Image (cartoon, rainbow, N blue to C red):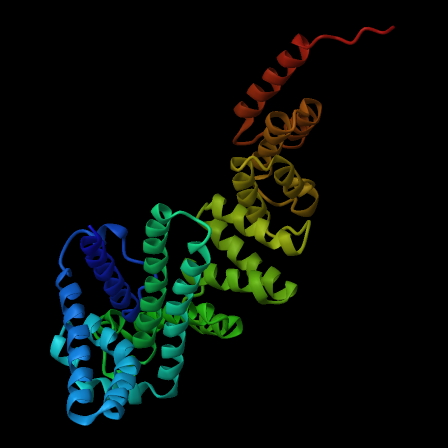
Amino acid sequence: MSLVLTACITKYTYKIIEYMSDGRWEPPSVAESFTGEGFHLFFKQMAVFIVIGASIAAAGFFGGIIVAAGVGIFAALALPASVMVLAREDSLADAVHPGKLFGIMTAIGWPYLLLCFFVMLLYGGSGAFLALLGTKISSSLLYPISLFSGSYFTCVMCALMGYCLFQYQDVLGYTTEDTQQSEVMDEESWKYKKALSDSSIYFQEGRIEDCAESLRNALKSRKKDAELNRRLFEMRAIGSSIEKMERQAEHYLQLLADSSQYTLAADALTAVRHRHAGWKPESPESCYNAARGLVARRQFRDAVLILKDMHIHSPEYRKIPQAYLLMAQALSDGLQRDAHALKVLTFIQKKFPENAVNKEIEELVSALNNQSAKAPQAVSA
């Protein structure tokens, strides 16, 4: 059972390297650990360890302990490169070829030593975690925990190696799937894909301003692109000044209103209000669209506040009856303020006698009046 689980984990971790090296940031599904091709990589990895052990033994037999130590140090440093080659090229010969491994190490340069340091740190972290638990839990629990801990740290190590391949693909001579697709793309589509990829990398590296700059450049030719605007808004909401955040939010909410995406609009409005309480967009259409999302999320009070006084701020807006009907529904259904809801409905009927939702307004007025008539009357003492 241990052998089977180790083979499945090995297959999955190599899949992680493949995904990351291709610039795919979503992890492979766990089902891929147990199905499909790739189990042979486990046996090839075992063969790599055997070749390394045999090389060290041969070096010690023919050259003495100093030569064996040198070969062992090189093997330890070259092991991440060997894993990356095996995952990327599926070649046992290349994975144990000293010249191939040395070429990868020198091509990456000093950052490769940093990669080795983090790999050793993660490997030691797993051991330290188990040593800490070993004296506090029973041996029957220690085995499954050790399996989970080792698997987790191995996944992180492989993600690091996969990202290293992606980051240095130019000097290593690898071609990712995104690059292959760009060869048959037109220039504008390639720039769009590149902007999405660069923004993801910058965000993961914590370079918020570089991420925003990449998205702004792409938006010059795609001003209404939903994904680019969403990402730029999220960058502004995280790390930019309040003024920049509000300016981008105004534009983003208008795009969402144009496509009637009220749930996303409610999310965006809530994100802005975390930094600037009480803010609402200048566009009445954006307010109405976001209010629909707020009502759907049962944030009735916020929906009422964003619609309040719309007839004063935007008297020319043609959907004021619909917006105020929504406000009345929020007051009645969500806040149990039927009297206020009736006032809003009466105002609509007087101010906008001819409107597209007149039937719905009359039905709600009738329902509220009936409910008020059935309510018990207070008796004076």
